[in-house]
Amino acid sequence: MTPTIGIIGGSGLYSMPGFEAEEERSIETPWGTPSDAYVVGTLAGKHVAFLSRHGRGHRISPSELNFRANIYGFKALGVERILSLSAVGSLKEEHRPLDFVIPDQFVDRTRGRVSTFFGDGLVAHISFAHPICPQLAQVAAAACNEVGVPSKSGGTYLCMEGPAFSTFAESNLYRSWGMDVIGMTNLQEAKLAREAEICYVTFAMVTDYDCWHEEHDAVTVESIIANLMQNAQNAAKVVTAAVKYMPATRECKCGSALAHALITDRKAIPEATRKKLELLVGRYL
Image (cartoon, rainbow, N blue to C red; front, side, top):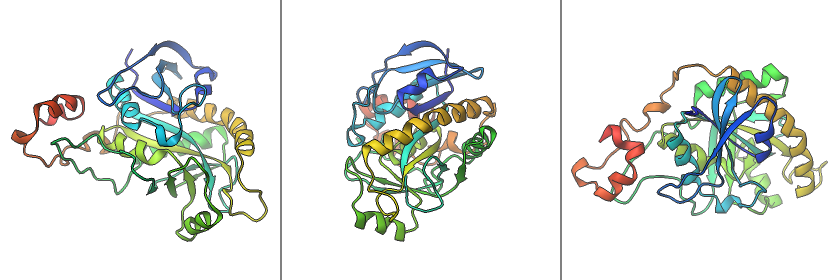
């Protein structure tokens, strides 16, 4: 079985209605071990692979995630599209807790995270002006409408370092910039997915108003978990609908993102680097 759709989220999705698990696949990558084993099976008649972003039991902090291993593992499985689900705080009144936002832009406020497969003698500069696959964004919006989950298409996801939540000053600074939601994980996933020529979209599930909202208490883990539990059922419904209505063919440019991105003279690429990146760049070398 070759899964063509990857799903990144919580481990609770493994037991979602309609998902028939076939096997778990543990993958070792040139960048180490992914967050967990990939659970491969069928959903809505399609072959899919699930990955628990933080590991089952939520063991891995956002700053500790091995993003390269996670995305490379999907590539090794044959995945062409990734649906990412993540909890976020809202930075605008209009994005209410329990709403889903499908952002089309990112701003990076992380520090020192590695978000590229390249280096070690091979330089690549991908186009990232539009970081979300437009075709997948349409599928995501249609899925939310199909199951009746309140959603907003478009907006900017600010990716912060964490693991602490924002200060009041930071939250209001990001609001002054016009940011829509704030999270800790999706920017690196989106960049690496683009380098791996995998389509990527985020379902940003609002759990709270961060700490800026005068009528809401400062964000707490307890309040977030309560809303996460309510979001879980909606997430399962939305994912199922998105998989069900996934187009058979990709009509975007994600699948050829590296076609004009490799800058290094082919003769100058070290053999070890060429071998390590064979899965990603082999067809161009």
